[in-house]
Image (cartoon, rainbow, N blue to C red; front, side, top):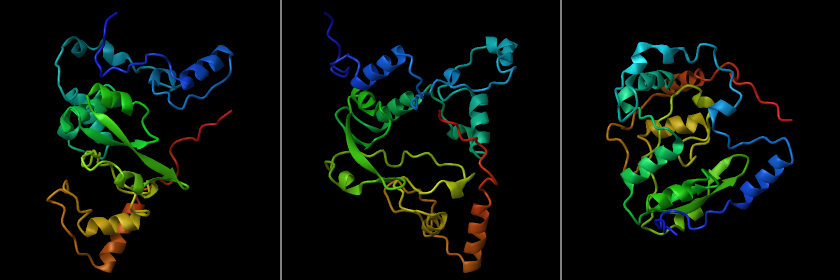
Length: 242
């Protein structure tokens, strides 16, 4: 029998959740799969001409790009508030993106902090990259917040993927509380005050980010602008759960 690498999970059997799910499906029970990420099975109403570009002659020209096709990165940049396309990297999946981050930021044998509960494949992805996942807890008190005691209990050599956070668009920013990766700002006013004071001190702080003294009137105007970025109504219909 072939012996696989120690990076591969030693027990190939399905877990109990998978087995329970298969029993319910076999019994014909209606299910709502909150882990579904396959867009072709998500009931999306695609436009009739979605596949038309596949018939274009340009599709016969292969021009590989390690960061993703330039046209695709430009389209993503437009959706995300006009970000620079050369700052956009496209991957085939979130698992591939995490794997690339572990390769770039960790050495074999490193330990890395990962939230719990969170992305269910962290343990497998880190193991495949010869990295050990060290969980820290998230607590729910009306919203999810970091349990900083569990973070402090991590071994001192454990790495956190600090500095590897995506900068979000300002669109809809008043609706996205709490702010920052640790949720320390509960309101958009608190977040704006932190940024006007030069951000959160940390080893990865951009040197271009400096304290910005403002008058009370300027602060009021800035907050009015940020609040104006919230949509007048929720653009997404709330799904009906049977």
